Image 1 (cartoon, rainbow, N blue to C red):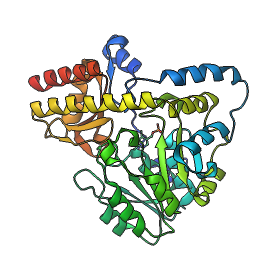
Image 2 (image 1 turned 180 degrees about the horizontal axis):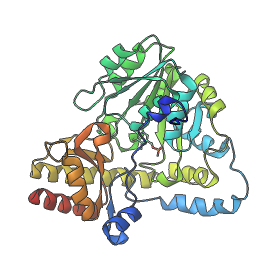
Image 3 (image 1 turned 90 degrees about the horizontal axis):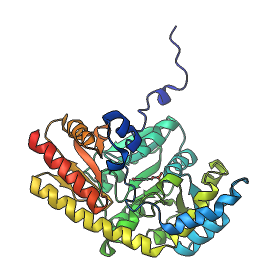
Length: 370
Ligand SMILES: *Cc1c(COP(=O)(O)O)cnc(C)c1O
């Protein structure tokens, strides 16, 4: 008899593929760790802000105690920053935790969740982990088709995930279009608006999603400290929503899901405007440089509003993995996106100028000999 533990919907899940760690690539390819460039996980190439390091060092003496389960100070800082009451905020162990919590808090097993083709992998994981039905709406130009997503909402739909900008494609939907969508979504369907890259948006692209949270009781805005704030390793994300949704998430949340060091660092990073500004500027310059190189190489890419670019490196379905392997041999780690149904493409995080140059040189070399 073959044993099969666990529900069939859990066995059907394809595990999340993370960016390869530097140490692993060094071991596998016999390279010096110091010379490896990692542009695979959309981390901030500046690393952690100094302000956050200082705050963590101060908090380190408290680690014998449990974290503040309600994260009073971090919530107060977020409440002041975004002008919402503290009881509209839910903290997560990264915003991945928020996305999972939302699925568990709003959806039952026999109900459905709507999200777009080529959208963030965690939407599928959170849906499948419940045994709920996924309604995956075909993308248009690699981005969300909000009209089609609206039309796809069925009687049993309880949640829609919208990523803006989207990962891994970098596509962006303007504010008025999102608000028009929100105004038409039935009120018993929660909308998670995942804004992991919002701090990278140029001034002309910004919109006030927190104002929509005040207007739409079914809207939850999700943000993270992992990208522009530079704290990916600490795992802090947060959600802003009206108390009805927030209260449900808080019932399910692990009481100590955000640790003491993470809480302290997040407060410091939130208030470090110069760091955010520098991160956004560096990103804009790096975007220009990478896309200029892609243009020169005649490579198609999707115009991006995040800190990464999706680039097509060949016209056959082996291209992504093949080019990725050649880049790895040269000590450059990017992200193949075959698991997203994009086997001809690679996603590259925008790095420091010298990291971008190393990637471009390795890519040019690979394509010249392909
Ligand atoms: C990176 C990312 C997240 C969050 O990551 P955490 O580190 O868990 O906060 C969420 N959504 C999208 C679209 C992302 O790209």
